[in-house]
Length: 71
Image 1 (cartoon, helix red, strand yellow):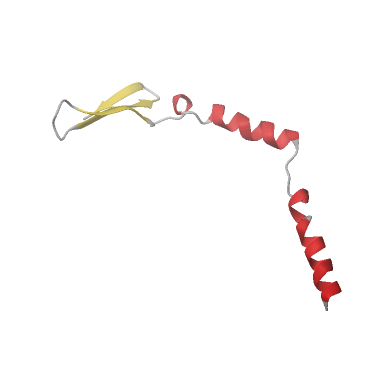
Image 2 (spheres, rainbow, N blue to C red):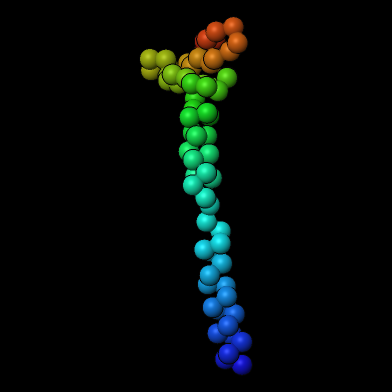
């Protein structure tokens, strides 16, 4: 009874080793942050802030026609 359980533990403890990514996987993952940063994403809300001390929230978004300001 103890040997099959020990064998099972030995086999499953090495599973995380097989799940590691390659250097190419990590490079591809790190390149996504540059690709999807807010400056490259359309309709992303920039400069979000309250107007003075009011209840009005202002921000601007990037559109194909240029920046669009919202209040």
